[in-house]
Image (cartoon, rainbow over the protein chains, first blue to last red):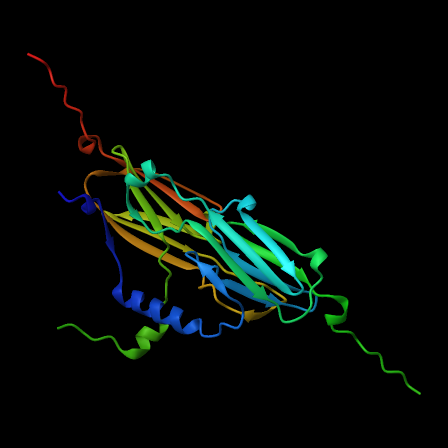
Length: 146
Length: 122
């Protein structure tokens, strides 16, 4: 009996193709930043008047393996997941999850307050909060009556 | 006669992301590890029905009060289906999720565990 019969996979081919095309066409705007490495550090960016929030998927990566640094309004995020050793590798009959390092640079649209950048990691999602500098925040202008 | 699905049906069909998995077999059990970022115990649904193992997870990624500028991450809808064969004891399954990683342990039924055969010297 073939080793692979133990866990045979069923998948919906239609779904596969839809997913594939969606992914390819969704990433047409690459001005957000450069990336490299086997792990694709896809990021979502949100903003409000006070700050920017970046969310990146980092499943199973320890806090000490995430490195975030900032120059002006560009963030450099480095992530690494250790590769399993050779002995263990032999017992796998399917390996899809990545291992290794990946790095991503993200340039934010406006100035941020570097000293108040905070990051939290929850359920394998890295959430980085970058407060905007005072001058970037919208300011209410009061109209005086003469 | 097979009916061809109309264009409209396809538009409304949900798209799922297939989570990456590592599967290993150590003789006594099969371990499956899947990456499910953003998923916790409450958003996860694992079912075994008639030899079919379905791993499904969804989570809302709401950020109230914020405008979204860039979306690269796929929506949090994961699904992956496997067919189990008789060597797996379907009533003996362990599942745990932590930091977005799901670990499933499927114990093999007694009869399919590799049995060591003693060689006696005559």
